[in-house]
Image 1 (tube, rainbow, N blue to C red):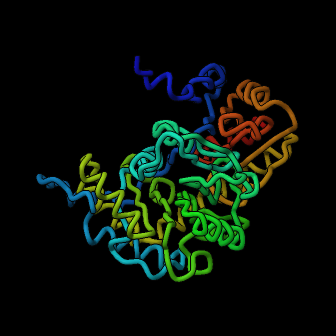
Image 2 (image 1 turned 60 degrees about the vertical axis):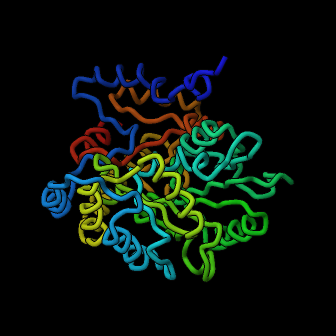
Length: 364
């Protein structure tokens, strides 16, 4: 009898946080939810206008995406990330980034018997996507830990979720060379790349990393964090045109298309750097306030040089920390959600309003 999907996948981790959320909601001044990295600030007005102006969209969009949208992605990567040398055939709009990450192993032909490597502390969807494809997974941060087996697919995430760690150029280059020598597809999740604080993140597609070719390399980008577009589900994948072409061929058959109005909004968002800088300033203020409060309450902040999170510990089991903070009406994510190495940390998101961040700081 075929195994049900619910039996093939791990339990959805956020369900385990429900009791702590219920306790936090009981605080007289209400909950401060710092557990999920979902934007709370307004979508830029220019992006909303672009969406509204494109609302009359009776026909099917093309899976490959609008030329203007793909060009906007290329222009953004060159302007903001220093990525050059890519053409329109190296970019594909996606329905956010999570859908792509979960489906990418299957769409690239990864299957039973294959190995997928992801970071030791990682966004759970890397593992879920591999499991849905029937592949095995290995959590490893060093190439030597992989051993002699050749992975079909290797994930990088810099800046990292949950730790905010940024991988240096030298390490990225070494991983690119290692994967190319073995024929392993390298995919870098870079959805926080414009949110560097104490370190400047570098794309795996930068010439200092991959040279003058994107062969064997893909980068995944999302507009959810940089532009407060989580509700629009706008992202894209870029890199090796051959790999992008494989993804396109599968996605055309499945009808995985970014709606036309969203593509127009995406084009507007990618072309506007001003709103990104304004949002960065908001997050910088919240980050500073939460860091001061956490350190004043006896926490140590590890990594956290980029992204939308503080990776905090006070040397106890993460669930004890979650429970203690819930008593203060503050909800955070236990580090164990992201791997065994996170068992004594919690992830504290910057995605709450200034008023709620101030409330959390006062309570701490």
